[in-house]
Structures are given as structure tokens and as C-alpha cells.
Length: 71
Image (cartoon, rainbow, N blue to C red):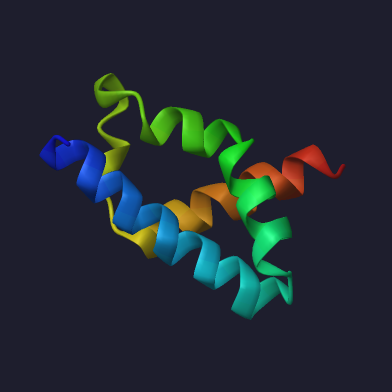
């Protein structure tokens, strides 16, 4: 596993935890939302540099994505 892969796994864990805590989701629902998001896709694309950002920043990006999706 590369360092970037490890960082992304840790970030995913943290973002999923935030979804559970802040949006009152089940773990399964939070995983489904995050792993099927454009944010997750961008996180796994090294060209975006998103993997350098904090989990809180990535959570904010995801929140904006979800708000836009729900409009």
C-alpha cells in the first residue's frame, strides 16, 4: 500500500465518522454516501491534490457536494 493509499484510507475513516456523528447516519449509509461521491473520486485522483487536505476540509467539500446534489 502506498503512502497516498494509506492517507486516503485514514481520511475515509474520519469523513465517514463525521457523517455518522454530524448527519446521524448509520455507518453503512455513511460509507455508501462517501464511497459513491465525486469527493471520494477526487480524493483518489492524485492529480487533484485533495489527499493533502485535512479530513475536516474534505468533509466540507462533501457537504457542499451533497447540498448541491439535493437541490
